[in-house]
Length: 66
Image (cartoon, rainbow, N blue to C red):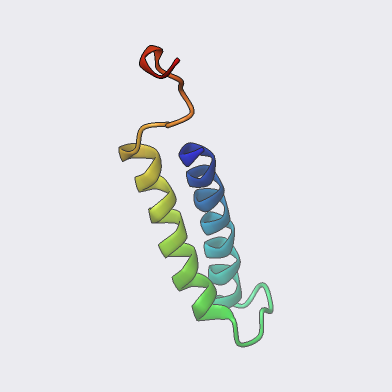
């Protein structure tokens, strides 16, 4: 479950980061949402990557809990 959330956060952050950077440099128009998109994209991307690296997946059922 944690890995699914981490992948969603990393992909969503990467998309927001790409859209924000394209908007800042003028090839896409987001209006006033340029810098918040970049900031949130960076936060979500690095949070998702760190969750993927340092958390164990908790969906595995161990033999002790049966």
